[in-house]
Amino acid sequence: MKNKWYILLFIVLIAISLFAFQYVAELLSDAPRSLSLETQYLLNLPACIFVGIVDFLIIVIVHKRLDNINNTMRIFIDLLLASVWVSCFGIAANYILSIILEEPWPEDYALLKMSLPVVLWNSMIVLLIEIFFYQQSQMEAEKKLAIIEKEKIQYQYETLKAQINPHFLFNSLNVLSSLAYSDAEKTNLFAKKLSGVYRYLLLTNNRPMVTLKEELAFLESYVFLEKIRFEDTLFIEIDEYDLYGNRLIIPVSLQLLVENAIKHNIATLKSPLIVRIGFTDEGITVSNNLQLRSSVDRGGVGLGNLEKQYALHDKAIDIVESTTEFVVRVPFLE
Image (cartoon, rainbow, N blue to C red; front, side, top):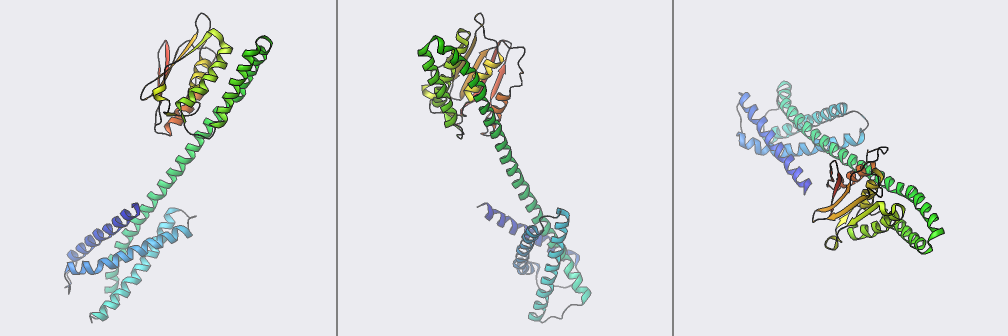
């Protein structure tokens, strides 16, 4: 459908430009005409469309054969070849018409004078085709750049998720080692939750989206492990989500937000860290009381990567920070 519109636009441009050139030539010429302006236009239009098609093919061939030279030289070659072609075509067409109409063959000077407007008109058509090719190449370049940028962001996000493994595993194994000496039942449960976390990371590694229900089941295991570490210094409050269980989000996004809150804030018995997760028709709200660590870099690499991930889906994360609270609103994808 798109190509049909391009073809129609090409024909319309040829028709309009031919009429303009022919009208100007009629005004500037004092020579008598054997045919009316309208008749000449109708006779010339099919020939000019044919010329335009050949011009297009010439440019396509030159672009394919000489794609390693600069644009200026390529356009010059296109104009040169198109001018030679249209001059030869014009001379041949006029020769045939002179025989059919039994008119005398024009003198060399008159023939040159007659060919110049045709060459000028054809040069304009060639330049229009070149502009079309340039725009197409720019669009293709932008598409390729967008794909590369998307792959880059995806790689960064996958790298960020991979970072969960060594740090989280190290901390979890330390906790598991301590539990093994004091509570066998809790050790067993801890090991099951830990394996569940890594199973989820493996299963969602190549999935662009997961349901909220899947993500929260994973988050429940993650929170259990963190609660063993932080005990009563950390509280995670999750609202009812039955109405939104099948809505889609980016994998590990909630875990990254909870981890971000734990990483950047102090959690003590006197001032525990409280993370609240709520839901609306639009998305998820993750908030926590603000009691920042002074030694932690607040660059927010994880949060920044998550923002880029949602941007790939034309969605935006809303971040609001006050003196007492940090709030992140994450939209549902579908």
